Amino acid sequence: MANLYPVIVGTAGHIDHGKTTLVKALTGQDADRLPEEKARGITIDLGFAHMRLASGQRVAFIDVPGHERFVRNMVAGVHGMDAVLLVVAADEGIMPQTEEHLAILRLLGVQRGLTVITKADLVDAEMRALVHELVVDAIQGTFLENAPVVTVDAITGRGINELKMALHELVAGVKRQSVVGPVRLPIDRVFTVKGFGTVVTGTLVSGRIQIEDSLEVVPDGLMVRVRGVQVHNRAETEALSGQRVALNIAGVSYEDVKRGSVLASKGTLRGVNVFTAALELLATSPVVNDNVRVHVHSGTAQALGRIYLIDSQELRPQDTGFVEIRLESALALARRDRFLIRSYSPVVTIGGGVALEVGIHHRRREPGLMKRLERLFAGDDAQAMYDLIARSPMPVAAEEVAARLGLTPAQVMEMGQSQADVIALEGRYLWVESQLLPWDQKARAILLQYVQDRPIKPGMPIDELKSRMAHDWPPRIFRAALQHQGWFFDREWVRLTVEPAPISGQDLAAIQSVYEAVRTGELNPSRFDEIKRRLTLDEKRFEDIVEYLFLQGCLLRLEDGLAMSREAYEQGKELVAQAIRRDGPKSTAELKEALQVNRRLAVLFLELLDRQRVTRRSGDKRELVP
Image (cartoon, rainbow, N blue to C red; front, side, top):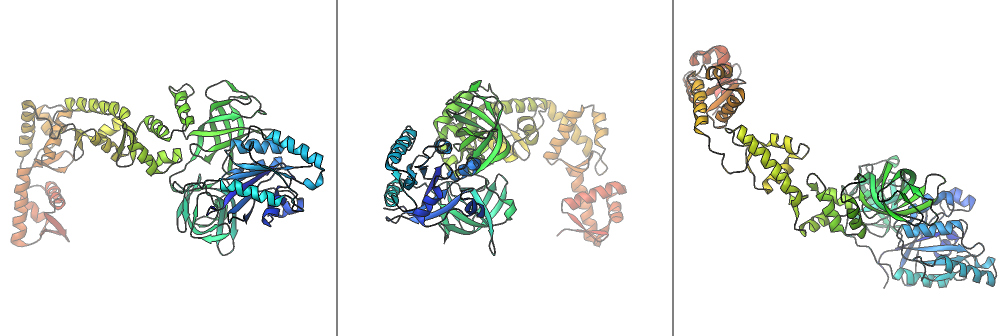
Protein backbone atom coordinates (compact mmCIF):
# COMPACT_ATOMS: atom_id res chain seq x y z
CA MET A 1 0.00 0.00 0.00
CA ALA A 2 1.36 3.43 -0.93
CA ASN A 3 2.31 5.94 1.73
CA LEU A 4 -0.18 8.76 1.97
CA TYR A 5 2.54 11.40 1.76
CA PRO A 6 5.48 11.82 -0.64
CA VAL A 7 8.74 10.08 0.11
CA ILE A 8 11.71 12.45 -0.14
CA VAL A 9 14.45 11.09 -2.42
CA GLY A 10 17.64 13.00 -3.09
CA THR A 11 20.32 12.72 -5.72
CA ALA A 12 24.05 12.67 -5.05
CA GLY A 13 27.14 12.35 -7.18
CA HIS A 14 29.90 14.09 -9.09
CA ILE A 15 29.30 17.15 -11.28
CA ASP A 16 27.96 16.44 -14.80
CA HIS A 17 27.11 12.82 -14.03
CA GLY A 18 23.51 13.38 -15.11
CA LYS A 19 21.64 13.85 -11.84
CA THR A 20 19.33 16.60 -13.12
CA THR A 21 18.76 14.82 -16.46
CA LEU A 22 17.89 11.64 -14.55
CA VAL A 23 15.33 13.48 -12.41
CA LYS A 24 13.80 14.98 -15.55
CA ALA A 25 13.59 11.53 -17.17
CA LEU A 26 11.75 10.21 -14.12
CA THR A 27 9.43 13.17 -13.51
CA GLY A 28 9.25 15.16 -16.75
CA GLN A 29 10.27 18.23 -14.73
CA ASP A 30 13.47 20.28 -14.94
CA ALA A 31 14.87 20.66 -11.39
CA ASP A 32 17.28 23.41 -12.49
CA ARG A 33 15.51 26.67 -11.72
CA LEU A 34 18.25 29.34 -11.84
CA PRO A 35 19.08 31.02 -15.18
CA GLU A 36 22.79 30.44 -14.49
CA GLU A 37 22.13 26.72 -14.04
CA LYS A 38 20.39 26.48 -17.37
CA ALA A 39 23.09 28.54 -19.09
CA ARG A 40 26.01 26.57 -17.65
CA GLY A 41 24.35 23.17 -17.66
CA ILE A 42 25.24 22.46 -14.04
CA THR A 43 23.23 22.47 -10.82
CA ILE A 44 24.34 25.24 -8.44
CA ASP A 45 21.61 25.15 -5.82
CA LEU A 46 18.95 22.70 -4.76
CA GLY A 47 16.34 21.72 -7.32
CA PHE A 48 12.97 20.08 -6.72
CA ALA A 49 10.65 17.84 -8.76
CA HIS A 50 8.03 15.18 -8.08
CA MET A 51 6.37 12.15 -9.61
CA ARG A 52 3.82 9.45 -8.86
CA LEU A 53 4.85 5.80 -9.19
CA ALA A 54 2.56 3.17 -10.72
CA SER A 55 1.63 2.13 -7.18
CA GLY A 56 0.24 5.61 -6.56
CA GLN A 57 3.10 6.49 -4.25
CA ARG A 58 4.28 10.06 -4.68
CA VAL A 59 8.00 10.78 -4.67
CA ALA A 60 9.52 14.23 -4.16
CA PHE A 61 13.05 14.64 -5.50
CA ILE A 62 15.75 16.96 -4.18
CA ASP A 63 18.40 17.44 -6.84
CA VAL A 64 21.68 18.52 -5.24
CA PRO A 65 24.70 20.15 -6.93
CA GLY A 66 27.72 17.99 -7.69
CA HIS A 67 30.44 20.60 -8.07
CA GLU A 68 32.88 20.77 -5.16
CA ARG A 69 32.30 24.53 -4.83
CA PHE A 70 28.63 23.90 -4.07
CA VAL A 71 28.97 21.10 -1.51
CA ARG A 72 27.50 23.43 1.13
CA ASN A 73 24.31 23.52 -0.95
CA MET A 74 24.43 19.75 -1.34
CA VAL A 75 24.64 19.32 2.45
CA ALA A 76 21.58 21.57 2.90
CA GLY A 77 19.62 19.25 0.62
CA VAL A 78 20.54 16.05 2.46
CA HIS A 79 18.70 17.12 5.60
CA GLY A 80 15.32 15.39 5.65
CA MET A 81 15.95 12.90 2.82
CA ASP A 82 14.25 9.51 3.23
CA ALA A 83 16.51 7.90 0.61
CA VAL A 84 19.07 8.78 -2.04
CA LEU A 85 20.03 7.95 -5.62
CA LEU A 86 23.82 7.86 -5.91
CA VAL A 87 24.50 8.78 -9.53
CA VAL A 88 27.65 7.63 -11.35
CA ALA A 89 28.32 8.38 -15.04
CA ALA A 90 29.35 5.34 -17.11
CA ASP A 91 31.95 7.36 -19.02
CA GLU A 92 33.80 8.56 -15.89
CA GLY A 93 33.03 6.13 -13.08
CA ILE A 94 33.73 6.91 -9.42
CA MET A 95 35.01 10.48 -9.05
CA PRO A 96 36.07 12.67 -6.08
CA GLN A 97 32.61 14.16 -5.47
CA THR A 98 31.06 10.70 -5.73
CA GLU A 99 33.17 9.59 -2.78
CA GLU A 100 32.66 12.83 -0.86
CA HIS A 101 28.88 12.76 -1.36
CA LEU A 102 28.74 9.12 -0.23
CA ALA A 103 30.72 10.00 2.90
CA ILE A 104 28.46 12.98 3.59
CA LEU A 105 25.34 10.85 3.23
CA ARG A 106 26.68 8.31 5.72
CA LEU A 107 27.82 10.95 8.21
CA LEU A 108 24.43 12.69 8.08
CA GLY A 109 22.55 9.46 8.75
CA VAL A 110 21.00 8.57 5.36
CA GLN A 111 20.36 4.80 5.49
CA ARG A 112 18.39 3.93 2.36
CA GLY A 113 19.10 4.35 -1.32
CA LEU A 114 20.25 2.78 -4.56
CA THR A 115 22.96 3.45 -7.11
CA VAL A 116 22.27 4.57 -10.69
CA ILE A 117 24.84 4.33 -13.50
CA THR A 118 23.93 6.97 -16.08
CA LYS A 119 25.04 7.82 -19.64
CA ALA A 120 25.09 4.14 -20.59
CA ASP A 121 24.80 5.14 -24.28
CA LEU A 122 28.24 6.78 -24.21
CA VAL A 123 30.23 3.60 -23.54
CA ASP A 124 30.31 0.02 -24.81
CA ALA A 125 29.21 -3.06 -22.92
CA GLU A 126 32.69 -3.85 -21.65
CA MET A 127 33.08 -0.37 -20.17
CA ARG A 128 29.62 -0.55 -18.61
CA ALA A 129 30.55 -3.84 -16.94
CA LEU A 130 33.83 -2.39 -15.66
CA VAL A 131 32.12 0.69 -14.20
CA HIS A 132 29.47 -1.54 -12.62
CA GLU A 133 32.25 -3.54 -10.95
CA LEU A 134 34.00 -0.38 -9.74
CA VAL A 135 30.73 0.98 -8.34
CA VAL A 136 30.04 -2.27 -6.45
CA ASP A 137 33.53 -2.07 -4.93
CA ALA A 138 33.05 1.60 -3.97
CA ILE A 139 29.82 0.99 -2.06
CA GLN A 140 31.11 -2.01 -0.11
CA GLY A 141 30.67 -1.40 3.61
CA THR A 142 28.19 1.47 3.08
CA PHE A 143 24.43 1.63 3.43
CA LEU A 144 24.20 1.04 -0.35
CA GLU A 145 26.11 -2.25 -0.23
CA ASN A 146 23.07 -4.50 -0.65
CA ALA A 147 20.95 -2.06 -2.66
CA PRO A 148 20.33 -2.40 -6.42
CA VAL A 149 22.71 -0.87 -8.98
CA VAL A 150 20.64 0.20 -11.99
CA THR A 151 22.11 1.23 -15.36
CA VAL A 152 20.16 3.81 -17.42
CA ASP A 153 20.34 6.12 -20.39
CA ALA A 154 18.23 9.07 -19.38
CA ILE A 155 18.20 10.51 -22.92
CA THR A 156 16.73 7.45 -24.66
CA GLY A 157 14.85 6.19 -21.63
CA ARG A 158 16.71 2.89 -21.49
CA GLY A 159 16.56 1.41 -18.00
CA ILE A 160 14.15 4.05 -16.66
CA ASN A 161 11.31 1.54 -16.14
CA GLU A 162 13.70 -0.76 -14.29
CA LEU A 163 14.74 2.23 -12.15
CA LYS A 164 11.10 3.04 -11.38
CA MET A 165 10.58 -0.56 -10.22
CA ALA A 166 13.65 -0.28 -8.00
CA LEU A 167 12.33 3.05 -6.71
CA HIS A 168 9.04 1.36 -5.86
CA GLU A 169 10.85 -1.21 -3.71
CA LEU A 170 13.02 1.49 -2.17
CA VAL A 171 10.25 3.84 -1.07
CA ALA A 172 7.95 1.03 0.05
CA GLY A 173 10.37 0.36 2.89
CA VAL A 174 10.42 3.96 4.11
CA LYS A 175 8.72 4.36 7.47
CA ARG A 176 6.87 7.61 7.95
CA GLN A 177 8.04 9.73 10.81
CA SER A 178 5.67 10.36 13.70
CA VAL A 179 3.93 13.72 13.73
CA VAL A 180 4.24 13.72 17.53
CA GLY A 181 6.89 16.20 18.59
CA PRO A 182 7.77 19.85 18.16
CA VAL A 183 7.77 21.48 14.74
CA ARG A 184 11.20 21.68 13.08
CA LEU A 185 11.47 22.96 9.52
CA PRO A 186 15.02 23.77 8.36
CA ILE A 187 14.61 26.44 5.68
CA ASP A 188 16.36 25.80 2.35
CA ARG A 189 14.70 28.47 0.19
CA VAL A 190 13.22 31.93 0.83
CA PHE A 191 11.43 34.02 -1.79
CA THR A 192 8.49 36.36 -2.23
CA VAL A 193 5.31 35.89 -4.22
CA LYS A 194 3.47 38.99 -5.40
CA GLY A 195 0.22 39.35 -3.49
CA PHE A 196 1.25 36.81 -0.83
CA GLY A 197 4.57 37.96 0.60
CA THR A 198 7.31 35.81 2.09
CA VAL A 199 7.45 32.10 1.27
CA VAL A 200 9.86 29.58 2.80
CA THR A 201 10.42 25.95 1.86
CA GLY A 202 12.04 22.96 3.49
CA THR A 203 11.56 19.38 4.60
CA LEU A 204 9.47 19.15 7.77
CA VAL A 205 11.68 17.10 10.08
CA SER A 206 9.16 16.70 12.88
CA GLY A 207 5.75 17.84 14.05
CA ARG A 208 2.66 19.16 12.28
CA ILE A 209 2.10 22.64 10.82
CA GLN A 210 -1.38 24.09 10.33
CA ILE A 211 -2.64 27.37 8.93
CA GLU A 212 -2.64 30.13 11.59
CA ASP A 213 0.05 28.39 13.65
CA SER A 214 2.56 30.69 15.33
CA LEU A 215 6.16 29.54 14.86
CA GLU A 216 9.54 30.83 15.98
CA VAL A 217 12.41 31.58 13.61
CA VAL A 218 15.52 30.08 15.25
CA PRO A 219 18.14 31.28 16.07
CA ASP A 220 16.81 34.80 15.41
CA GLY A 221 13.88 34.55 17.85
CA LEU A 222 11.36 36.15 15.48
CA MET A 223 7.73 35.01 15.57
CA VAL A 224 5.76 34.33 12.38
CA ARG A 225 2.22 33.29 11.54
CA VAL A 226 1.47 30.63 8.93
CA ARG A 227 -0.88 32.10 6.31
CA GLY A 228 -0.76 29.26 3.80
CA VAL A 229 0.57 25.71 3.41
CA GLN A 230 1.58 23.85 0.26
CA VAL A 231 2.62 20.22 0.17
CA HIS A 232 3.78 18.64 -3.08
CA ASN A 233 2.70 21.80 -4.95
CA ARG A 234 -0.85 21.52 -3.62
CA ALA A 235 -2.56 23.85 -1.16
CA GLU A 236 -3.29 22.05 2.11
CA THR A 237 -4.57 22.95 5.55
CA GLU A 238 -1.66 21.21 7.27
CA ALA A 239 1.75 19.65 6.68
CA LEU A 240 3.13 16.60 8.46
CA SER A 241 6.65 15.48 9.30
CA GLY A 242 8.55 14.00 6.38
CA GLN A 243 6.89 16.22 3.77
CA ARG A 244 8.35 18.83 1.45
CA VAL A 245 6.61 22.01 2.54
CA ALA A 246 6.16 25.57 1.27
CA LEU A 247 4.79 28.05 3.81
CA ASN A 248 3.45 31.55 3.22
CA ILE A 249 4.37 33.35 6.45
CA ALA A 250 3.44 36.72 7.94
CA GLY A 251 5.18 38.81 10.56
CA VAL A 252 8.59 39.08 8.91
CA SER A 253 10.00 40.50 5.72
CA TYR A 254 11.89 38.58 3.06
CA GLU A 255 15.19 39.92 4.41
CA ASP A 256 14.49 38.68 7.96
CA VAL A 257 14.55 34.96 7.07
CA LYS A 258 17.35 33.04 5.38
CA ARG A 259 18.48 29.57 4.47
CA GLY A 260 19.82 27.97 7.62
CA SER A 261 17.11 29.35 9.88
CA VAL A 262 14.67 26.84 11.37
CA LEU A 263 10.95 27.29 11.92
CA ALA A 264 10.10 25.65 15.25
CA SER A 265 7.41 25.44 17.90
CA LYS A 266 8.00 28.36 20.25
CA GLY A 267 10.58 27.65 22.94
CA THR A 268 11.43 24.12 21.74
CA LEU A 269 14.68 24.92 19.92
CA ARG A 270 17.50 27.32 20.72
CA GLY A 271 20.30 28.93 18.84
CA VAL A 272 23.55 27.76 20.43
CA ASN A 273 27.18 28.84 20.20
CA VAL A 274 28.67 25.74 21.77
CA PHE A 275 27.87 22.03 21.72
CA THR A 276 29.46 18.75 22.75
CA ALA A 277 29.56 15.95 20.18
CA ALA A 278 30.89 12.61 19.09
CA LEU A 279 33.01 13.39 16.01
CA GLU A 280 34.07 10.79 13.44
CA LEU A 281 36.88 11.60 11.00
CA LEU A 282 36.97 10.23 7.47
CA ALA A 283 39.86 8.12 6.21
CA THR A 284 40.88 11.07 4.01
CA SER A 285 40.92 13.55 6.89
CA PRO A 286 44.11 15.16 8.14
CA VAL A 287 45.01 14.80 11.81
CA VAL A 288 42.84 17.14 13.87
CA ASN A 289 44.48 18.94 16.77
CA ASP A 290 42.99 21.12 19.48
CA ASN A 291 41.58 24.55 18.57
CA VAL A 292 41.45 23.88 14.83
CA ARG A 293 39.11 26.18 12.86
CA VAL A 294 36.48 24.46 10.69
CA HIS A 295 33.22 24.89 8.81
CA VAL A 296 30.26 23.33 10.64
CA HIS A 297 27.15 22.30 8.69
CA SER A 298 23.88 21.29 10.35
CA GLY A 299 20.54 21.05 8.64
CA THR A 300 20.51 23.78 6.04
CA ALA A 301 22.83 26.05 8.03
CA GLN A 302 26.56 26.51 8.31
CA ALA A 303 28.87 28.40 10.66
CA LEU A 304 32.55 28.72 11.42
CA GLY A 305 33.78 27.21 14.64
CA ARG A 306 36.68 25.63 16.50
CA ILE A 307 37.11 22.05 17.68
CA TYR A 308 38.31 21.41 21.25
CA LEU A 309 39.25 17.81 22.01
CA ILE A 310 37.90 16.31 25.23
CA ASP A 311 39.26 12.76 25.45
CA SER A 312 42.48 12.90 23.43
CA GLN A 313 45.36 15.10 22.34
CA GLU A 314 44.57 14.58 18.65
CA LEU A 315 42.13 12.81 16.36
CA ARG A 316 43.56 10.77 13.52
CA PRO A 317 41.81 9.64 10.30
CA GLN A 318 38.91 7.24 11.03
CA ASP A 319 39.05 8.05 14.78
CA THR A 320 35.89 8.85 16.71
CA GLY A 321 36.20 11.06 19.77
CA PHE A 322 34.33 13.45 22.03
CA VAL A 323 34.77 17.13 21.24
CA GLU A 324 33.40 20.52 22.17
CA ILE A 325 32.68 22.77 19.20
CA ARG A 326 32.53 26.51 19.80
CA LEU A 327 30.78 28.42 17.03
CA GLU A 328 31.41 31.93 15.79
CA SER A 329 27.69 32.39 15.04
CA ALA A 330 24.67 30.61 16.50
CA LEU A 331 23.15 27.48 14.95
CA ALA A 332 19.72 26.03 15.69
CA LEU A 333 20.76 22.73 17.19
CA ALA A 334 19.35 20.04 19.49
CA ARG A 335 20.71 16.83 20.92
CA ARG A 336 21.05 13.99 18.38
CA ASP A 337 21.24 16.41 15.45
CA ARG A 338 23.83 15.30 12.93
CA PHE A 339 26.42 17.70 11.61
CA LEU A 340 29.23 17.79 9.08
CA ILE A 341 32.73 19.22 9.49
CA ARG A 342 34.73 20.67 6.59
CA SER A 343 38.26 21.98 6.95
CA TYR A 344 38.73 25.74 6.93
CA SER A 345 41.12 25.79 3.99
CA PRO A 346 41.15 24.04 1.62
CA VAL A 347 37.43 23.42 2.15
CA VAL A 348 36.97 19.64 2.10
CA THR A 349 34.83 17.30 4.14
CA ILE A 350 36.84 15.75 6.96
CA GLY A 351 34.18 14.23 9.21
CA GLY A 352 30.90 14.55 10.99
CA GLY A 353 29.00 13.35 13.97
CA VAL A 354 26.10 13.76 16.35
CA ALA A 355 25.43 16.49 18.92
CA LEU A 356 25.26 15.16 22.48
CA GLU A 357 24.72 18.33 24.53
CA VAL A 358 23.95 21.82 23.28
CA GLY A 359 24.44 25.23 24.84
CA ILE A 360 26.65 23.91 27.67
CA HIS A 361 30.35 24.72 28.00
CA HIS A 362 32.48 22.11 29.77
CA ARG A 363 35.77 22.18 31.57
CA ARG A 364 38.07 19.60 30.03
CA ARG A 365 38.69 17.79 33.32
CA GLU A 366 35.14 18.13 34.60
CA PRO A 367 34.40 15.20 36.95
CA GLY A 368 32.20 12.52 35.39
CA LEU A 369 32.17 14.22 31.96
CA MET A 370 33.42 11.21 29.98
CA LYS A 371 30.93 8.78 31.54
CA ARG A 372 28.09 11.21 30.92
CA LEU A 373 29.08 11.69 27.28
CA GLU A 374 29.27 7.93 26.82
CA ARG A 375 25.72 7.57 28.17
CA LEU A 376 24.52 10.37 25.90
CA PHE A 377 26.21 8.73 22.92
CA ALA A 378 24.35 5.51 23.75
CA GLY A 379 21.14 7.43 23.05
CA ASP A 380 19.21 7.27 26.35
CA ASP A 381 16.83 10.28 26.41
CA ALA A 382 15.76 9.68 30.01
CA GLN A 383 19.38 9.56 31.16
CA ALA A 384 20.19 12.66 29.12
CA MET A 385 17.32 14.51 30.80
CA TYR A 386 18.44 13.34 34.24
CA ASP A 387 22.06 14.35 33.64
CA LEU A 388 20.99 17.81 32.48
CA ILE A 389 18.81 18.65 35.47
CA ALA A 390 21.08 16.91 38.00
CA ARG A 391 23.97 19.20 37.02
CA SER A 392 21.90 22.35 37.22
CA PRO A 393 22.30 24.54 40.33
CA MET A 394 18.56 25.25 40.24
CA PRO A 395 15.33 23.68 38.90
CA VAL A 396 15.09 23.73 35.10
CA ALA A 397 11.95 24.52 33.12
CA ALA A 398 10.63 21.61 31.05
CA GLU A 399 10.71 23.89 28.02
CA GLU A 400 14.44 24.47 28.49
CA VAL A 401 15.13 20.74 28.83
CA ALA A 402 12.99 20.06 25.75
CA ALA A 403 14.88 22.61 23.67
CA ARG A 404 18.22 21.08 24.70
CA LEU A 405 17.14 17.50 23.97
CA GLY A 406 14.97 18.01 20.89
CA LEU A 407 11.79 16.86 22.66
CA THR A 408 8.45 18.38 23.66
CA PRO A 409 7.87 19.66 27.22
CA ALA A 410 5.17 16.97 27.60
CA GLN A 411 7.69 14.25 26.72
CA VAL A 412 10.16 15.70 29.23
CA MET A 413 7.56 15.79 32.01
CA GLU A 414 6.52 12.21 31.24
CA MET A 415 10.13 11.03 31.52
CA GLY A 416 10.55 12.99 34.74
CA GLN A 417 7.52 11.35 36.32
CA SER A 418 8.99 7.92 35.61
CA GLN A 419 12.16 8.60 37.62
CA ALA A 420 11.91 8.40 41.41
CA ASP A 421 14.62 10.97 42.13
CA VAL A 422 13.14 13.66 39.86
CA ILE A 423 10.80 16.25 41.38
CA ALA A 424 8.51 18.71 39.60
CA LEU A 425 7.95 22.19 41.05
CA GLU A 426 5.11 24.43 39.91
CA GLY A 427 4.14 21.66 37.49
CA ARG A 428 6.96 22.37 35.02
CA TYR A 429 10.30 22.94 36.77
CA LEU A 430 12.42 19.81 37.21
CA TRP A 431 15.18 19.04 39.68
CA VAL A 432 16.51 16.00 41.54
CA GLU A 433 16.25 15.05 45.20
CA SER A 434 20.01 14.56 45.38
CA GLN A 435 20.43 18.28 44.62
CA LEU A 436 17.44 19.51 46.61
CA LEU A 437 18.35 17.82 49.91
CA PRO A 438 21.75 19.53 50.41
CA TRP A 439 20.21 22.77 49.17
CA ASP A 440 17.47 22.44 51.80
CA GLN A 441 20.01 21.65 54.52
CA LYS A 442 21.93 24.81 53.67
CA ALA A 443 18.72 26.87 53.78
CA ARG A 444 17.79 25.41 57.18
CA ALA A 445 21.22 26.24 58.58
CA ILE A 446 20.89 29.85 57.43
CA LEU A 447 17.38 30.10 58.91
CA LEU A 448 18.35 28.59 62.27
CA GLN A 449 21.28 30.98 62.62
CA TYR A 450 19.02 33.88 61.71
CA VAL A 451 16.30 33.09 64.28
CA GLN A 452 18.97 32.48 66.89
CA ASP A 453 20.30 35.99 66.28
CA ARG A 454 16.82 37.53 65.91
CA PRO A 455 14.56 35.49 68.27
CA ILE A 456 11.74 38.01 68.34
CA LYS A 457 11.08 37.76 64.61
CA PRO A 458 8.36 35.33 63.42
CA GLY A 459 10.80 33.65 61.05
CA MET A 460 13.14 34.93 58.35
CA PRO A 461 12.16 37.31 55.55
CA ILE A 462 11.89 35.12 52.46
CA ASP A 463 13.61 37.75 50.30
CA GLU A 464 16.59 37.79 52.64
CA LEU A 465 16.84 34.01 52.63
CA LYS A 466 16.61 34.01 48.83
CA SER A 467 19.35 36.62 48.50
CA ARG A 468 21.66 34.46 50.61
CA MET A 469 20.65 31.13 49.03
CA ALA A 470 19.58 31.54 45.42
CA HIS A 471 19.59 35.16 44.32
CA ASP A 472 19.11 34.26 40.64
CA TRP A 473 16.13 31.93 41.15
CA PRO A 474 12.65 33.07 40.08
CA PRO A 475 10.84 33.93 43.36
CA ARG A 476 7.96 31.51 42.84
CA ILE A 477 10.34 28.61 42.13
CA PHE A 478 12.25 29.43 45.32
CA ARG A 479 8.99 29.35 47.30
CA ALA A 480 7.95 26.11 45.57
CA ALA A 481 11.23 24.41 46.51
CA LEU A 482 10.79 25.42 50.17
CA GLN A 483 7.17 24.29 50.19
CA HIS A 484 8.22 20.93 48.74
CA GLN A 485 10.52 20.53 51.75
CA GLY A 486 7.80 21.36 54.27
CA TRP A 487 8.57 25.00 55.06
CA PHE A 488 5.78 27.34 56.20
CA PHE A 489 4.99 30.85 54.99
CA ASP A 490 3.51 33.74 56.96
CA ARG A 491 3.14 36.76 54.70
CA GLU A 492 6.72 37.73 53.86
CA TRP A 493 8.19 35.39 56.50
CA VAL A 494 9.30 31.79 56.22
CA ARG A 495 9.97 29.26 58.99
CA LEU A 496 10.07 25.55 59.73
CA THR A 497 7.04 25.44 62.06
CA VAL A 498 3.38 26.36 61.66
CA GLU A 499 3.57 28.88 64.50
CA PRO A 500 6.49 31.15 65.43
CA ALA A 501 8.76 29.98 68.25
CA PRO A 502 7.68 31.16 71.72
CA ILE A 503 9.21 34.46 72.84
CA SER A 504 11.33 34.33 76.00
CA GLY A 505 10.32 36.14 79.17
CA GLN A 506 13.24 38.54 78.83
CA ASP A 507 12.22 39.48 75.31
CA LEU A 508 8.57 39.85 76.33
CA ALA A 509 9.61 42.31 79.04
CA ALA A 510 11.60 44.35 76.50
CA ILE A 511 8.64 44.35 74.10
CA GLN A 512 6.33 45.55 76.86
CA SER A 513 8.71 48.34 77.83
CA VAL A 514 8.87 49.67 74.26
CA TYR A 515 5.11 49.47 73.89
CA GLU A 516 4.52 51.34 77.13
CA ALA A 517 6.99 54.03 76.09
CA VAL A 518 4.97 54.66 72.93
CA ARG A 519 1.57 54.29 74.62
CA THR A 520 2.22 56.78 77.37
CA GLY A 521 2.72 59.48 74.75
CA GLU A 522 -0.92 58.98 73.70
CA LEU A 523 -1.56 61.30 70.72
CA ASN A 524 1.86 62.93 71.13
CA PRO A 525 4.18 59.87 70.99
CA SER A 526 7.96 60.08 71.34
CA ARG A 527 10.17 59.28 68.37
CA PHE A 528 11.88 55.86 68.27
CA ASP A 529 15.38 57.31 68.61
CA GLU A 530 14.42 58.93 71.91
CA ILE A 531 12.73 55.76 73.23
CA LYS A 532 15.74 53.60 72.24
CA ARG A 533 18.13 55.90 74.16
CA ARG A 534 15.85 56.01 77.18
CA LEU A 535 15.57 52.18 77.34
CA THR A 536 19.26 51.55 76.46
CA LEU A 537 18.44 48.89 73.84
CA ASP A 538 20.86 48.02 71.02
CA GLU A 539 19.69 49.02 67.55
CA LYS A 540 19.09 45.54 66.07
CA ARG A 541 17.08 44.36 69.06
CA PHE A 542 15.06 47.58 69.17
CA GLU A 543 14.25 47.28 65.43
CA ASP A 544 13.06 43.68 65.91
CA ILE A 545 10.80 44.72 68.82
CA VAL A 546 9.26 47.60 66.87
CA GLU A 547 8.70 45.32 63.84
CA TYR A 548 7.05 42.74 66.11
CA LEU A 549 4.70 45.37 67.55
CA PHE A 550 3.78 46.51 64.04
CA LEU A 551 3.10 42.91 62.95
CA GLN A 552 0.88 42.34 66.01
CA GLY A 553 -1.05 45.49 65.26
CA CYS A 554 -0.05 47.06 68.60
CA LEU A 555 1.59 50.03 66.87
CA LEU A 556 0.53 52.01 63.78
CA ARG A 557 3.15 53.84 61.74
CA LEU A 558 2.79 57.60 61.30
CA GLU A 559 6.10 57.97 59.44
CA ASP A 560 9.57 56.46 59.61
CA GLY A 561 10.74 56.61 63.22
CA LEU A 562 7.33 57.59 64.61
CA ALA A 563 4.29 55.51 65.57
CA MET A 564 1.37 55.53 68.00
CA SER A 565 -0.20 52.81 70.09
CA ARG A 566 -3.42 51.08 69.11
CA GLU A 567 -5.15 52.68 72.10
CA ALA A 568 -4.08 56.20 71.08
CA TYR A 569 -5.13 55.51 67.49
CA GLU A 570 -8.60 54.41 68.58
CA GLN A 571 -8.91 57.46 70.84
CA GLY A 572 -7.91 59.86 68.08
CA LYS A 573 -10.14 58.13 65.52
CA GLU A 574 -13.14 58.57 67.82
CA LEU A 575 -12.38 62.28 68.38
CA VAL A 576 -12.23 62.87 64.61
CA ALA A 577 -15.40 60.86 63.99
CA GLN A 578 -17.33 62.75 66.67
CA ALA A 579 -16.28 66.13 65.28
CA ILE A 580 -17.30 65.27 61.71
CA ARG A 581 -20.59 63.61 62.76
CA ARG A 582 -21.45 66.69 64.83
CA ASP A 583 -20.69 69.48 62.38
CA GLY A 584 -20.03 67.79 59.00
CA PRO A 585 -16.74 67.73 57.00
CA LYS A 586 -13.87 69.41 58.76
CA SER A 587 -10.65 71.09 57.68
CA THR A 588 -7.24 70.01 58.92
CA ALA A 589 -7.07 73.03 61.23
CA GLU A 590 -10.45 72.18 62.75
CA LEU A 591 -9.51 68.55 63.31
CA LYS A 592 -6.17 69.63 64.83
CA GLU A 593 -8.13 71.48 67.48
CA ALA A 594 -10.31 68.41 68.11
CA LEU A 595 -7.21 66.25 68.56
CA GLN A 596 -5.32 68.82 70.64
CA VAL A 597 -2.02 68.16 68.85
CA ASN A 598 0.34 70.27 66.75
CA ARG A 599 -0.30 70.67 63.03
CA ARG A 600 2.45 68.28 61.94
CA LEU A 601 1.10 65.43 64.11
CA ALA A 602 -2.44 66.24 63.02
CA VAL A 603 -1.48 65.93 59.33
CA LEU A 604 0.33 62.62 59.93
CA PHE A 605 -2.60 61.20 61.92
CA LEU A 606 -5.22 62.31 59.39
CA GLU A 607 -3.18 60.78 56.54
CA LEU A 608 -3.12 57.54 58.55
CA LEU A 609 -6.92 57.69 58.86
CA ASP A 610 -7.10 58.20 55.09
CA ARG A 611 -4.91 55.10 54.51
CA GLN A 612 -7.10 53.13 56.90
CA ARG A 613 -10.17 54.30 54.91
CA VAL A 614 -11.71 55.93 57.98
CA THR A 615 -11.73 59.36 56.35
CA ARG A 616 -11.29 60.77 52.85
CA ARG A 617 -10.58 64.21 51.46
CA SER A 618 -13.40 66.26 50.00
CA GLY A 619 -11.93 69.49 48.67
CA ASP A 620 -10.00 71.08 51.54
CA LYS A 621 -11.99 69.16 54.17
CA ARG A 622 -12.31 65.57 55.33
CA GLU A 623 -15.41 63.44 55.62
CA LEU A 624 -16.05 59.97 57.04
CA VAL A 625 -15.96 57.02 54.66
CA PRO A 626 -19.44 55.40 54.76
